Image 1 (cartoon, rainbow, N blue to C red):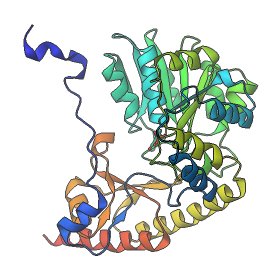
Image 2 (cartoon, rainbow, N blue to C red; image 1 turned 180 degrees about the horizontal axis):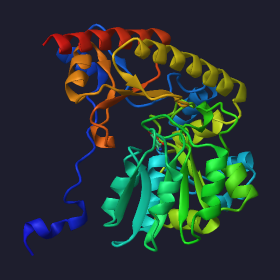
Image 3 (tube, rainbow, N blue to C red; image 1 turned 30 degrees about the vertical axis):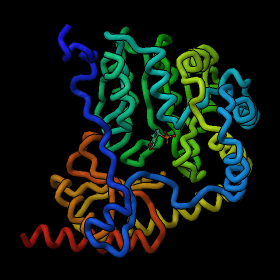
Image 4 (spheres, rainbow, N blue to C red; image 1 turned 90 degrees about the vertical axis):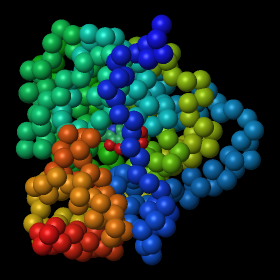
Length: 372
Ligand SMILES: Cc1ncc(COP(=O)(O)O)c(C=O)c1O
């Protein structure tokens, strides 16, 4: 066997995730006083005080392995959602749930269907397994569920619907999802990725766990995460609530100690802070409106009606040079080439002052680009 034969052909064309440089490094390299990071859709607020307290207690026990069964967190989440614990699959981020599901379900020749541009893990994890990702273009920057259905074949195992969608921030409403679930063939598992669930304040936005899984008994895995509004992105905790067989399969392939004990404890302590969640939701909506207003004064196009904690900004030109220029201004955003939108950037809602700084910096960069 030649050395090159060590790796599975499926991964040959994958490009490693390109992490941004650490903020301190950018600051040092470019000699900046201040760097504003609006790149990763993290919550703009930190962990809840109860989570910090839980962490402080938990670090004293770091000589121990975590509870591999995640008993307390699983039970608490099952209670919160009114389902049996057998329907709750926790992992190191919703991202890991997607990865474990792909590992458990996909073989070469199998297909997954998702909208595009959308969250890249659906595609990357399918490719890792040698399966085929079928990317269905968005309509008006929104998931087109009819087109998704039209792309389903006998080989389709999973349909991913990001609701709201990352990177465009748009959502699909109840009527469309109802129609989708009436029509989707039985052999398909639908993953409704609700990573930004807590930010959405729209009457037409369904709670997929309540409505599609519990009430209608649909074959759906609903994803949630502690990375966004709960302010725990650094700890990596996410989960899926879904059919018992799907959860059992994920648990079979999950690493024994996937979620650290501090992460489990902090997530557990974060449940029940409903007032603070509502405050964060309202503050984010206000800051998002401000970010939209800032962008609307510039020669760019923002995706209308964003409902999560980020906005999609179409700059009408290759965005990489603008990204570099913004970086030199001390503002980090997410260029969307890897999401399939090379002319767009995604900007996470920050503090009001950060949103203004972004707007001023983008204006300077756009002016400089025109003058060049
Ligand atoms: C749509 C979507 N799904 C899943 C995730 C992953 O979240 P986690 O941090 O829980 O892995 C993200 C993170 O940005 C996301 O945008």
